[in-house]
Each structure stands twice: as structure tokens, then as C-alpha cells.
Image (cartoon, rainbow, N blue to C red):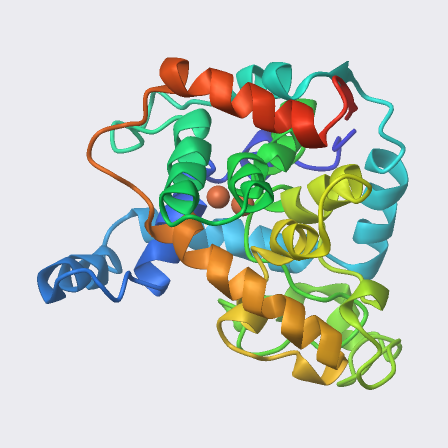
Length: 292
Ligand SMILES: [Fe+2]
Ligand SMILES: [Fe+2]
């Protein structure tokens, strides 16, 4: 698998958090001080920008309609591994990157901060559970998948790339951009055909959605499936493919996004103390093992 990509192409970032840090620079917390926003802006000059740019160059070049088809055929068989959600969390935590001193949070802590912030606001338990597992699809990285096929903003394939997607200039190198089937506004789709009929670029969102689709309420599934679809939930670039129902469900996606981006707290959550609560919650909605 992935023989055609060099080591550098598989891992352009020192860790997947670099993408999330970049999102924070792009969409700073409106509640944060002006000074913090200033710091974010200064980041634009830093060297990390180069690795994030390279990450997006690879993502936009290689995420074609055919690439997505190939990945779906492979990973939606769910024949890689069978494990409990807890084993998956432990597995995911092996992704912690020591070379980056700024990345003090491991994956479990990001998940718990997200879900605890949702819980503190008194939302229903399935919303809390969604926060707790929304990034579980990142286990794809541990199957040797390139970072740009696990994380990064997602976008529809099979139709024109919006210039509202971050670094749109990199799509020039994507073969779909010159393919007449795919390079018009609607491409292979009909107006307002509904997002369920639209293929998204491949990553941790769609993968986890497919794993969870029988177990969670519809708003939870939308949050999982589209949380990285920034060009829609932040920029509204693909309304022409959406139904009224999609728009209604995107209210949940929008509600979820601040918890994902802005829930970092100075004191990390006590994973050990919280575990019994989450064990019960997971057991309420999910089978004891899941196929990955
Ligand atoms: Fe995510
Ligand atoms: Fe996340």
C-alpha cells in the first residue's frame, strides 16, 4: 500500500496536530483576546507554514475522484482489525509525537476536552459521545495511510473545487481539474442532490461515519461525517449540492465545531477519573468491539 508515495510525501507534517493548529490560525476563537489573534497572524511567517503548505499541496494534488474510490473500496471493507473503542483509543494514542514540544495534548486528551466541554454545556449524552469519538477515524494513520488522506479539510470530489477551500491554487495539479467529467460546477452531480450522494475527499471523517452509521442519531452522524468540511460549514461554498435537510443538519455541525477547535483548557482532563462515565456511555450506544 502507498508504494507510490515517498516517506516525505506520506508524512509532510511532524504530527497531525499541525493541521489542527493551522485551523486555529485560520479560524481563531472569537472569544480570544486580540493579542492572541495577533500571535496567530504572526504564525503566518513561521516555518511551520511550509510544512502545512506542503501537506495541502499533496492533499489537493492526490485526492482525486479515483483516489477516493480506491480508498473506499479498501477501507470500507473494515477487514483490517477488530477492537473495542478503548483499544482504538490506546492505539490512537501511540500517535503522540515527541519531536514537537508544542503538542502537549495526546489524542485522548483532545477527545476528552471536546466531549467534556459538550457535557458541561448540558447537551444530550449522544452529543457527548460524539465529541469523545469524533477523531477515532485517525487510526487510519496507523495503517500506514498518508497524513493528507487522514486529516485536512475535506471537500467534494467529482465536481469543481471551490476557491473557498484553503490553498485552492494547489488544485491545478489535481488531474480532476482538467477532466471534463469533474471540472464543472456540478460535475457528476445534480443541483441540490444531497450530500449523501456526494463523494467527499477521503479522510478520518467519512471512515468513522461509515463505521458508526448504524449506532448514533442522525445529528451525531452529520457532525462526525462533515466536521472537517470547512469550505461548507465555515464558508458556505457548496450549498448548491445540499438539500434543506442537509442545511438543517449542518446546524449541528456548526454547533459542534467550536467544541472541536476551542475546547483546549489549561488543566488536562483526568482520563482515569472520567473513564467509568465514558465506559458506560460507549456501552449504551456501541457494540463491545468494532471492525476497523
Ligand atoms: Fe477531526
Ligand atoms: Fe478533533
